[in-house]
Image 1 (cartoon, helix red, strand yellow):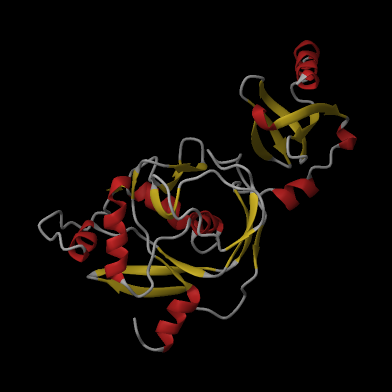
Image 2 (tube, rainbow, N blue to C red):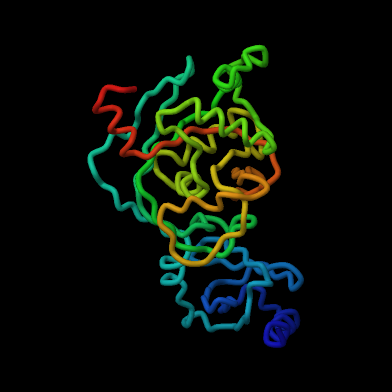
Length: 290
């Protein structure tokens, strides 16, 4: 802490707010970049290869001024933050049309791969999304749109309720009802896991559908359900993580137009997407069972 305060003191008096600095994290990781903003009580913002990275001061072990020639941030940025690697290059249908009740969906392929969960490669760490950790995922499909009021209420036998084609927004306390809906839906349809949801936002095929839904529904915070219960992220590499299976609230994820970040919430209301493992949907197509 003394080392950080000394650097901050030096910055204030030498007016080097644009200095190239080395930020050492508590976990030993290092970021090199140009200092943009510094709030000793809250955060530091540095520019790493043109990308703005906001780091909570609670995660910072030390800050050192560097000569410009010494700054080499590319390796860290590529290896630790924002890497998105597709590993499934098999010949699979990119889009599949399905019908649920009388509602039509386009299921968008998200090819399996790996990424660093908690950072989208373009913006600073998402709200409540630390520590950043590597996740490996198998291919899956995710719906291009939300489940409608009509579809949801018909499946859970609440025909007397709203029957519009507008997306239905459901409070977290209705989790048992949401589980019932997907049970009745069958066909291995389910909510996306939180890892799948975040990975899908980075995918070339599916990434734009999230932003489009927010603009279409005129919501700044268009929160969406995930199958996991809310909990802090845990370090270490994971493969097809399901997240906690018990808890007080499911995870809700959203894209904020205000600060252009992907955020996580609990104890909220949100919209429902359909997800399914790619191999299961492809098998149904082969068996002509859509």
